[in-house]
Image (tube, rainbow, N blue to C red):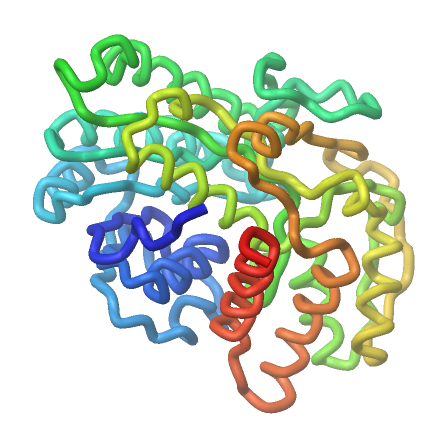
Length: 359
């Protein structure tokens, strides 16, 4: 990894006011990038992006508006684009299936279509999810060449976003034409269950636990045995940055789909996560309340990251214990003192990377 490549680059991030987007913008600013954000207004209170108070160009634009996206891209003229804007919640997708699909499918198409107008754009990274795969709930991880699928509207929309990405890469950013008719490389990234400080979205495990804890309440757990690859947001973002580096360097071998998830040691049940959080923050209380007819959600979902481990030399640096500890400490510190640990977490993670690669 050579993250110095982002220094002084004009980087556009869609969805910058969201959880992952705000962490990504903070990291890019530390790397010296000129960051421009494109997103809707923040939809949670508190909001991580607003708490960070980053010195960057923040623009309110709906990615469903193709003309506004094209106009914004032409005004900014970015070197690279990270596309993270999405409707990110499974449960919300059952309530608003058309909005979810408009945002996640047509929003992705609008972003990629606008990229066609940018002659000097070096690369685009489309961020989807592990739920883009046709989930058979088997015990081994999905590889990048496994078929797309999606039981619920959210998962289906992300599977479609992957197909849209592949379509635009083949039709307009064809690798055989790279350096001839265009100079843009397009890749996609599929992350696992990402956690970390600063997420206040509804119907997510960690934010639900935190909200109940600060109110002195007991959080109700509906799927205690659901197993996920719990990954700190910085682990996932390090994969995005590592892949973006290769695209910025013009290496077309990396313009494809990639998995970035926690290793097998990071897989744990919801109940196990709760117990680990309780160890760091004793105020956490929970009870199990399994609903009779819950909406369908996958109980087991794993990704195989051998490709990223081997070809990108990407790996997880923070195991499950460090991930849960860092996440829990972030919230506890915020609510007890008002301090934001985001930048210190990024610096600690970068030091771990530096120590691994350079000793």
